[in-house]
Image (cartoon, rainbow, N blue to C red; front, side, top):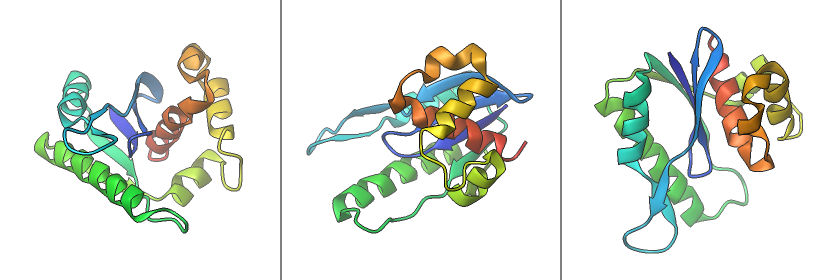
Amino acid sequence: MIVGIDPGQGGALAFLKDGKVEALYDMPVMARVHGKGKEVNAYMLCSIFMSHCPGRAVVEAVSAMPGQGVSSMFRFGESLGILKGVLGTLQIPYIMMTPQKWKKVAGLIKKDKDVSRTLAIQQFPSISDQLSLKKHVGRSDAIWIAKSIL
């Protein structure tokens, strides 16, 4: 079992076994105890990983982009830290994969963001109901991130 991870609060998790999508999850989030907004729910993330027992993980290696605010980048870094902490705690080995690399493997270089979702629906029609909305692009990205090492 491999898990592909589009990190961040709007990201997702895709569990693949033998090239087949076994499960999809939006990144579990919860309201912050102090301050505004949300944060990744480490407990739920841990529960999801434990229920699927992935042998390894592929995490999208993202970095700051021009125009992003300091606080949004801080929150993203915090989310990535929580994710890496959970993976480390559960002893799930992981590799970081740049967007350029997994998008090249999937044929998504210089394509519109929603093409990822369209291609996932075409390749995995049995899960098309889980990819039906534009906001599900994180799920499709997570699928391609996992498939990039198969």
